Image 1 (cartoon, rainbow, N blue to C red):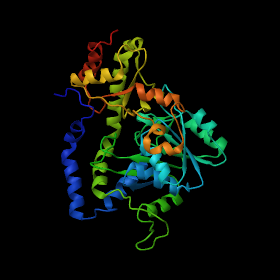
Image 2 (cartoon, rainbow, N blue to C red; image 1 turned 30 degrees about the horizontal axis):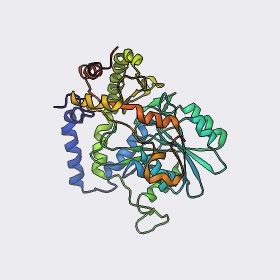
Image 3 (cartoon, helix red, strand yellow; image 1 turned 90 degrees about the vertical axis):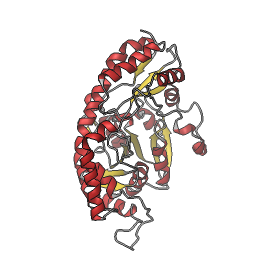
Image 4 (cartoon, helix red, strand yellow; image 1 turned 120 degrees about the vertical axis):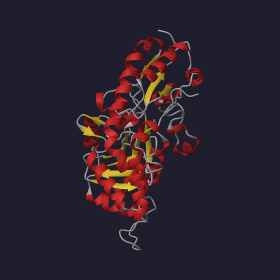
Length: 377
């Protein structure tokens, strides 16, 4: 029997079950299943929570990246910089926008994009940088803005794991020209299916994006762009409307759990196990809590993961293969050794259970189990 699941949705959903059912039923009764009232309400509410003027709901986080970049004017003649250490959806979104993806390495201490590596990758064709706020921690806004200003780059945020994350006075999604979020069920703010949103302060980007997501049509049967069908449906928006007011509280719970992990894991650093750095303090919302099982550890990662599973503890690896080594994208021309930090991290990282309501006893059990399987102080 699983003692500590990787994610436990019931802790979130059970206390608000009546609200969720009522919201879903309201959509059913109204019958406005596509681009209905709940969608407009959520778009406005989420944008407001992030300190941005406009929100445009789409069908997925991947769609949010692709359509968001297109709406910002990024296309076939442009190069877009992004980290090799990210979920493949970031890369797919850039490719679907028509731009050429230029991958760069990451910081080994945080797993975030290495902005110095990004600077060195800039060419005359570079038009944008997609910064991934990975695992719930934002890239430094001041450093990112300085880079963009110095080289006239458009900033597009992939904030799929950073709902209401904060750093240096900025909220994720409020730094650049536009930002993409995912509402996949396991996200800090998750729907009951797929969903995404693009946030922007730009009215022109907003207008174009609303057309692009709806067959390229600013009004019915008038198609001014080559668009697609990528719309956040009303039932998912209704679910998100119910959950949004609880998000800050849930994020705080995650951050508190991470602090307990940090404290209990500290003695294990001498054995080669340590968490990725938190450079954002309480602004880190810990979509994932990721440790490194380095070469100094007496046990390899696979053994640790298997033995934790035998003790009823679910873990994950985010992500085991960097984008540049994925078979489908070999045509981009990258090879093993091009991004050593991303490659090393892919062999060392291990995501421990993390969700709102994760108890102190469960966290203690996870860390105690690490000791029990042979990782000693």
